[in-house]
Image 1 (cartoon, rainbow, N blue to C red):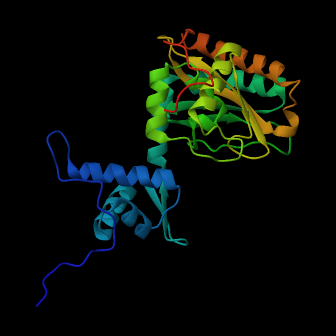
Image 2 (image 1 turned 90 degrees about the horizontal axis):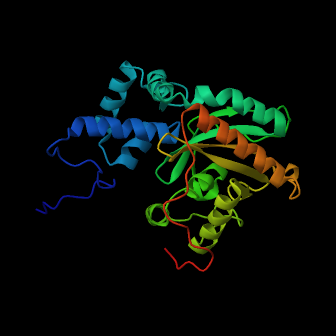
Image 3 (image 1 turned 30 degrees about the horizontal axis):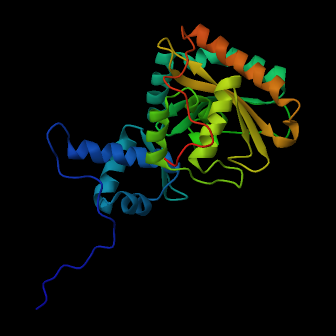
Length: 285
C-alpha cells in the first residue's frame, strides 16, 4: 500500500515552530490580525490559505481575537474585518506621537489655501500609511481611507520622505520592495526615481504626476522630528486638471510651508540628507 502523503494544497506556513524568544501561538495570532488588517475584509478560507495555517487553527485565532474585539465577523458576507480594539491600539500610538493632533489645524488651512484635499502619512518600510485627511469641498476630490497604504516611489508624500534619505537607505528600500508600475507615469527605474528625488530635495516638495492613479496628482513635503529625520509627510491631492504646471510651484511652496510648521510644532528640525542622491545616470539598484 502506498503510504506517501498527499500535498495538502496550501502554501508552506510562514509560521515556524517556536524558537528562542518567540511564541508560535502569538506569532500566528498576530500574523492573522495583520492579514485581516491588510485585506480589510477576508473569508476564513482566504486567510487560512494565504497564511498557510490550518483552517481550524485560523478559526480559533479569529474567534479569540473577536472575543477581545480586535476583529469582527460579518454574518451576511461571512467575512472578517478589523475590530474596534485594533483601532484603539493604533490610536494610542498616534496619540503618543501627537502628530495627527498637531497637524490637523494646519492641514485644514492647507486645504483652504489650495482648495485641495490635505493628507498626512507616516512611513512604514517602503510604504507610507495615511493617518489623517481633510477633504476639500470640491465634488471631485481625492480620498484615502485612514490606514490605507501606498508604495513610496508612487506617492507624493513617499517621494518627499525618500528625498531626505541617504542613497544607501533608498537603495535598500528599492531592493526589498521593487518599483511596481501602477500607471504609465510611475517611475519604475532607479535612474528616473533618483533624478526625481534630487529635484524634490532641491525645491522642498515632491510632485506626483499621475504616478499612482491616472487623472490624480499630488504634491508632498516631508515632516521632520527632533533628530532631523523624516517622520511623516503632508500633501495635497486632487484631479490633475487642477494641478496646472504654472500653478505647481505656488502649491508646492504652500505645502512645504505647512510641513515646516508641523515640524516646528512637534519639535522637529530639517536637515540635509546624509549623502547626495545620484542623478539620472545612476546605475540600476
